[in-house]
Each structure stands twice: as structure tokens, then as C-alpha cells.
Amino acid sequence: MKYLFWNICCAALWVGLTTLPAFAQQDDVVTRTQPVQEVFQTGLVYSQERGEVQLSYSSRFSKGKDHSSLQTPLNLEYGINDRWQIEVEWSAMSHRTKTGEATMRGSGDLSVGTQYSFMNMRGSNFHSAVGFEVSLPTGSIEKELSEGFIEYEPYLILARDFPKLNNMQIFSQVGVGFAQRVRRKVGEDQEAPAAHKFDLGVGTFVPFRHLVFTGEFNLSTNRWNNGGREREIHATPGVVWRLPPNLEIGVGAPVGLTRDADRLGAIFKFVYEFGTRHRAEVP
Image (cartoon, rainbow, N blue to C red):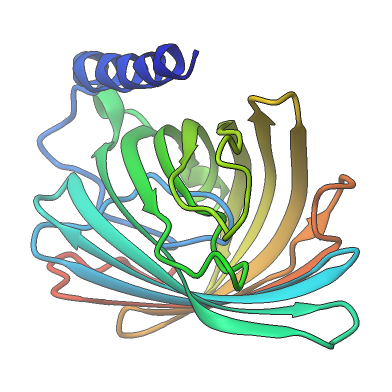
């Protein structure tokens, strides 16, 4: 079953890569205005331009029923050309139990990925992007800073601009993946299950002067081979402050809507670009 699922994922990504260019016929002039570079829980359609580097640093705090955690991922993106980028993300994490008796600190997992964007498809205000990510379990299993999975996830992003509404955008991201356990705690069952994963995110942002107001709704499900299932749903309002040159500071507040989701959270994000050839105008 796992091999069938993995083959379906690869086939879906291949179909997207081979068919989207036929629909993504673009004008000679590509719109470069990017009201915001990053939101909080969902990927955006924008890829880095050729030679452009983007550094993102986030601080993600979440509080669940019996635990709280703090993650500090550092993300690096590099534009191979104006539509294709590669990226690397590494996370350091501090995990604290509800009682405060145990605090686990250390580095988290590492992920690498790539994304290809199709902007202004057929000269319209529609955009799309396809991507693929691989997450590696580099964090400590014993400290519960990693679950010990290699995760493979192809994804698709769709977006629609509304220039007459102050450059508002509606966007969505869907991804499917397969997680295979390759590391285990000492004494743990060697037949620990793998998982099928599905992620869906929809949202919007509305620029207003130097601020960009955002709203996101995210669904994530894990279905285990042994019959177990987890479902997390979050709603995340946020705001991003755009500062010249090429700096963004954002604050988001995820709210859990299901039993498996952390109830409350806060995300602080800093984004800086350099090597930019086309600078977006601040609305």
C-alpha cells in the first residue's frame, strides 16, 4: 500500500509539472509586485528571482492540552531563475511539559525543497506553483524533538489577485505525503507504523499602506497504517509590517479548532531579502 501511495504522489507531481506550462502561457512582461513575501501557515505562489536570497526566521509558540512547545525554524530560499527556487529549513526546538518538570531543548528536523511558479497565467490575475519537499529526522528522538520520520510531500499552490481591491489575493495550498519511520526510541516497537498525510490551506491577504492583513485556515490529517488518525484544524489571523529595504516583520495567532490541535499559539516572523533586482512597491 505504501508503495502505491508513493507512486500516486510522484505521478501527481509529474502531471502537474508537465501539464501546467500549457495553461501557464505568460505575457512578455511579468507582474513583479509582491504585496507580501510570506504568511504564517500556508505557502505562497511567489518564488525568488534569479540570484535572489531570502532569509526567514520564525518563533512559533503553541500550547496544547498537556504540553507547550517553542520552535524556531530558519529558512533559506534561493532563486535559480525568476520562476524556480530551492530552499532549506532547519529548526531548533524547546519542548516543555504542562507541569514544567521537564524541558527538552535541542535542534529539530531539516527539510529541503524546490518550487516552480507560473505567474499571470495567460496574462490573467491567476497564478500557480508546484513544489516538492523532503523532511529529514535530524532531531533527537529521545528528547521528543523529532518523530523519526522521513516525509515526502508534493504540493500545489493556486492564487488569484484582485488588483481593484487594493491588491488583495486569495490563495490555497494542497499537499499529500508519505511519512516513513526510519528512527525509533530505544526499546520502541520495530514495527512502528508509517503515516499518510494530507494538508490543505486556504487564505487571503489585504495590503493597506505598509501593513498586510492576513487570514488563514489550515487542515492537516495523519492516517496511520495501524488505523490511528489525527486531524488538526487551525485558524490564523495575522498582520505583516513591510519595512524598506526588503524587510518584513509579522505576527500571527493560530487558534486550534479540533481536539488534536494545539489550542493557542503565536508566530513571530522576520523575512529579509537581498540580491533583489525587482523591488515591490509598498502599497
